[in-house]
Length: 72
Image (cartoon, rainbow, N blue to C red; front, side, top):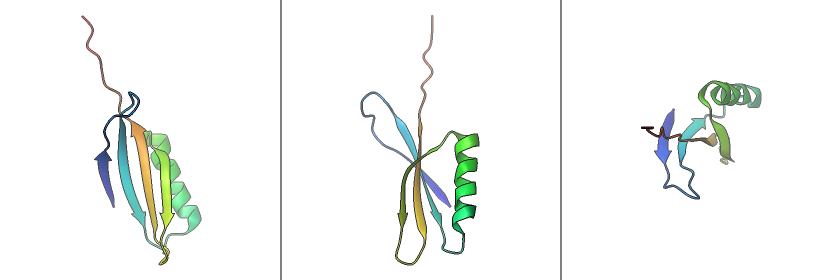
């Protein structure tokens, strides 16, 4: 269902990307609820949505990668 990618850092911010595909059988409301759930509990935000001619939705989610800095 999903594949996670990492893009090189830009402007000092590093993002983690997750690609999700929903078939056309899922209604708009169901897709919205699933994405809201991922956003609330996983920290993801919507990067882009593409609806293909056959009705499938390709969604790209992103979240910041927070690096822990060791203190002395």
